[in-house]
Length: 323
Image (cartoon, rainbow, N blue to C red; front, side):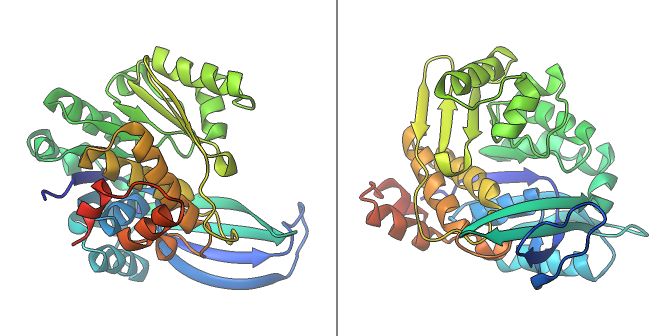
């Protein structure tokens, strides 16, 4: 089997994770329950997830010339992500994500502050080689933790070569018509979908309206993730809703969206129909929320297949992703 060949252009972030029983109010200090670090960043998370599910993944990005940068590169390399195009920015820190987890009443919520550091130092010259190289890939995955100009340049390169482009539109930011018109897929969560469309997807009717609005804006296919309510997929011909897959008690929602996007893109590149790709992605994300941290929580293909089998989902196509 030819492995799905995926290019990720995006962010690398060292996550500093604090758990507490409640978020502090303004000016207030509260005690935390736990602290640890974990490799993260939306781009790196999605790259690792796709690689752990069997894709051949290359990442383009930037880290600082510091210990956090070395740790992030080591994590990608350990998961067989090609890091030859990740550069080091001298005199700039590697990006850091400050994650606070509030754990109470058997639920977990997060608040995240990202200091972008080297992620914002990617230049057009750093990605110019992709104008020719992008045609070698089955999919390009983008996010919004790097300069918007870089996303627009890479998306245009891919579009001109006929390579599908997925934009995970997080964190929320204004999107140009030039970028939207180059996208094959866009994947906001419900908050980001509201920011882009002005429509709050708080009912099935409004979910449809928000998704339809994304299509009207020039994107070919829209995915809206809805947390514990699953996800929807919409294009001009199809409306699909896929429920969340329960894989155990939630521990940390960090990287669940990245897991979903990485799995969906891997499935589509493998040749899965959209309904099967949604189920596969929901299984991956369902596992991710039961574990702590970003990249450490991302499941392998064997783990996802086991959850699919438990839920009596057809795994025949996805068995090909095993080594």
